[in-house]
Length: 500
Ligand SMILES: Cc1cc2nc3c(=O)[nH]c(=O)nc-3n(C[C@H](O)[C@H](O)[C@H](O)COP(=O)(O)OP(=O)(O)OC[C@H]3O[C@@H](n4cnc5c(N)ncnc54)[C@H](O)[C@@H]3O)c2cc1C
Ligand SMILES: *[C@@H]1O[C@H](CO)[C@@H](O)[C@H](O)[C@H]1NC(C)=O
Ligand SMILES: *[C@@H]1O[C@H](CO)[C@@H](O)[C@H](O)[C@H]1NC(C)=O
Ligand SMILES: *[C@@H]1O[C@H](CO)[C@@H](O)[C@H](O)[C@H]1NC(C)=O
Ligand SMILES: *[C@@H]1O[C@H](CO)[C@@H](O)[C@H](O)[C@H]1NC(C)=O
Ligand SMILES: *[C@@H]1O[C@H](CO)[C@@H](O)[C@H](O)[C@H]1NC(C)=O
Image 1 (tube, helix red, strand yellow):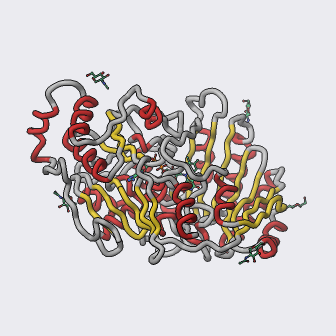
Image 2 (spheres, protein in one colour):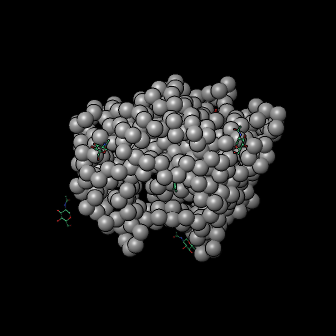
Image 3 (cartoon, helix red, strand yellow):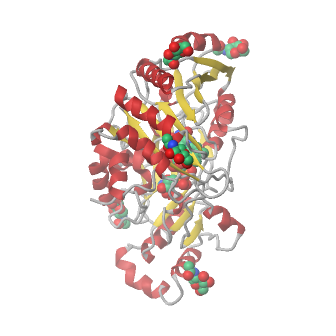
């Protein structure tokens, strides 16, 4: 089925052992010029296309989703094939430059550019082929595809799907390798739960296959901390057949006072513990409104029946309940233009942070509501807090907590706290608004009681704090695997896994 089968293919064109060739390469590429010149020469010699500074393509490559965090790469390799990726990795290793894969470029912390200046960015977005095998239902997907393109191809080729997040421009690379929570995840798990195998370029420019049975440690580490381990040139996903009809909905909540918000939050949290598997829902709190929104695997009548007790308790009213097919609900949540490819442009100016927690006790609910109705409501920027009902008894995510490197399966709630400047500059001290919001909840928490999502990274955190929050109990095993596959930390980024 797959051209590489189970083989281990060693670095081709440039596939010399990296360390031992250092001096010779220094001689070959170190003659003059700067790191950009040396990389360009190495890439060009290997036949890897380069997007040169000053070109329109380069401008697209380096324009980050978060306009607050801009970084300048040493060079951008415009990969069109897996061989290009391998040869680019070999060039970076030889020249002592950090290498970073960029897929959809939607990292909140601009980790697709390395999260700092001076990396070799391997731009993957031209590699977005999706091929569904009718018989096995397994999809082979290149490592530069975006979520909307993947969804449209799986549907068009065989009416199949995987579960994933809502934004069609997000890349499969970043999304799947670190989690991937969306409007089907309570029913069908994380995006990474659909991964059954991958082809990976390692730091020594060898190309390896991994799955549950082949290089299983690497496969485990990729599913939660993938960007630290290698570059995935190809994913293999199992897929499911979505039901013919699903119902997407929005309920508006009337919580005008702190007391009402407190009671409403408590009701939603209680409901989340046992809500049915077919229901996917999040609370969306903005400065001026509160919505419950979600996707139900069933029809309108069954949704009304399922939600009635909660809506009653939480003083919320269904404003929209629309039945449609798989692509209809994706368009509802992600916009009508699903099929996004290379060159997709989307930007915001913002700071965000995240939290995973169990059920909050009354003091913590009060602290959350107090901050919300205090410093947060008193702010004119466009902030929101999204609370996904992530876990609970019937959640497909809340199984086998250590089965992948994703560390938060047993958390009931997943918070994204997001603060955007729609006009003008984001203030230099602006990060405090959401950071303090999160701190109001975690004050006094035991370190084991909460975590953060590496796909909603907070770039202001110290490296050690970030890693402890993102990977918690999985960190030691990840560092051991990192030491094996990338001992010199070629795939470095500021909050990535360091070798043991
Ligand atoms: C508008 C928007 C909506 C979002 N909605 C959701 C949501 O509903 N649910 C959710 O869970 N998340 C969501 N996210 C977060 C999203 O999952 C992450 O930002 C994700 O990491 C983006 O992936 P990317 O490939 O676009 O990013 P990039 O910036 O290209 O990459 C992110 C990281 O992944 C690495 N990487 C990328 N491709 C590869 C590869 N092929 N091999 C190895 N490493 C690779 C990069 O080096 C970098 O470290 C959203 C983000 C945005 C901007
Ligand atoms: C590298 O050198 C070239 C000239 O050889 C120059 O044009 C370029 O600006 C330099 N780049 C950096 C990052 O210094
Ligand atoms: C889906 O909805 C259509 C239109 O309402 C209906 O005709 C069809 O029977 C439904 N299918 C299922 C499986 O419920
Ligand atoms: C619902 O509204 C009633 C009347 O306004 C109020 O007494 C009650 O506390 C509210 N409940 C919640 C959960 O907000
Ligand atoms: C609200 O903003 C005003 C003006 O910036 C400030 O004086 C006041 O202290 C703020 N109140 C709260 C609760 O943060
Ligand atoms: C590359 O690294 C992998 C993982 O450590 C190792 O198994 C393989 O032997 C290495 N290949 C070469 C050519 O050094």
